Length: 216
Image 1 (cartoon, one colour):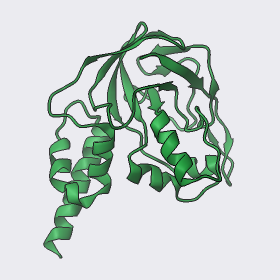
Image 2 (image 1 turned 120 degrees about the vertical axis):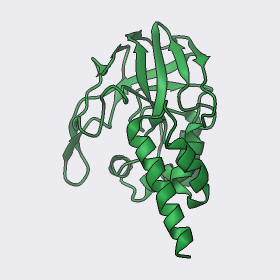
Image 3 (image 1 turned 30 degrees about the vertical axis):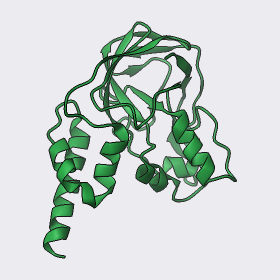
């Protein structure tokens, strides 16, 4: 596999309130990847975006295909979901939490899914598209960095490690959105390679489902 394209953005007004966001990105000839972010790509809200657990966001061609079929009146092109990179052959269904990948000279580890937010709705001027992305499990995923370096389009991508007892990004999203997966959500809340924020989400999803069963 090889990197298809890289993207970076700078904070700019987005949505009806014109709040600053770097969701809209442009193709970039390189990404200088550091432990807590990249030189080329910036975030407007550093409390919710960026940091060592969210250095890079990757999306998939499969995700774009699902979106285009569901919303034929809209136009979905690579780079429009706020991602930093696309790689043909990698998707939410075949990328697992904790996977370690060599990308050129950079080594990264999958830390968590991306939480779909209202900025997706603002980007496409379509209400509800953020919830659709979450339910369908086509959110994309974040990386933490094991070895910094510079990424370029066409860099080779290779899976180095996959932890035992992990799940795909799509399966994890299903555990959070589907109350029938409460048992698995409880187990994933202790998955060490999953970032703290998402372990908390799994624990809350499990408790919510358990409470619902007790009162049904």
